[in-house]
Image (cartoon, rainbow, N blue to C red; front, side, top):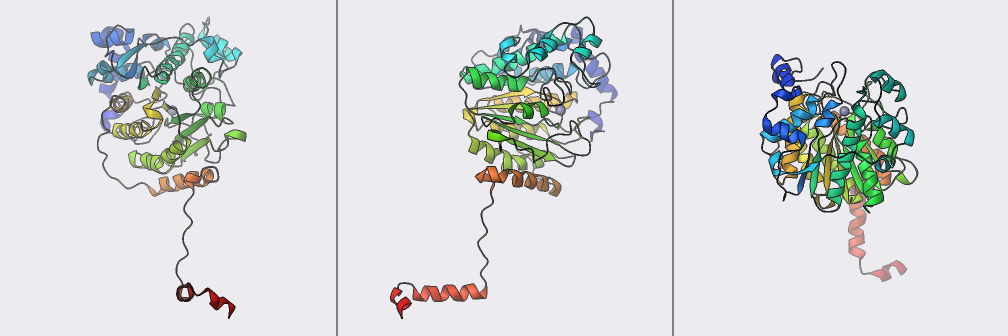
Length: 429
Ligand SMILES: [Zn+2]
């Protein structure tokens, strides 16, 4: 399981107490209750958006123990509040997605099935062909999914129109596995929140180029599938790949098709335990050169925090400081227009601290200094594999041709050439 320190072990007794307090609304402090219900005042002049009133998303709840649980969202909001970050942001009310917006990326049948009320969870499961991993609360999941998608659209719209500079969309259920070729709803996802916002920005707000960075530890097979032939969306996913890791897609060779060839980038990690040094090395060598060459007008982040240290599913080692640095780098693009939307992440403390690290940077604080550490050689091999796949499509990833090493014969020839320079008539002797 996770390479967790004792204080982040999911089975820890204090953790279960803490989780119980997060799940029970009666134990929420007043400010947290107000924030989750949308009654707390933020900073109206702030240019950083934070969703308020996410409480209905908590009604999407698993029938039994499940990593994608309501306490995740409460933990994030409790941390943002405790660290004073929530109070510094502009609060934007959640809203449901319009059917027209959902239809930009999903089929009419899927929109109908994913947003309705069912008589029972079993009926929903049959209608959506849900696998064992994904649940649907009969009366509430449809509304929660629509609210998650609509809220990402709302924040993205406000960023595109300049009302906000950036925003964090702490929402659930997550979305990035939704509408993969294999299945429409899968991997805890019911509607694909980020691509819906991308499609609204592209079709309705005049945005021509969007960068989607997906740092969730799982490959965003749904996002890849939606934009695989679309050159206007550069999709970059950093994820674990191989050894049966979910969902099994996301090889570096999957680079897009037709006009979209080269606009799909899979930084496929072959090992576990990768942390800040490995991720930032991938940013320095691949993500940022590609992003600068692409020159996006908007950046959306599918921000799963399940590559954070302590996550029971991801087994990676990113720290809140690492997430802050990735956010700071992405904020240098598109005039800082960036929307960070929550995907996975299942250790409550890890996701809360990671979200706070991201939020600090969005609010304009510099990313804290990062301890220097060598990049794992295996990660460098992974990065090089991706570079080789993408180099034919991106000049910025091509290595400069090495100049030939001087050999005695070459040195002698160049000495003669130097001597004869200017004596052009010697050629005619
Ligand atoms: Zn994930």
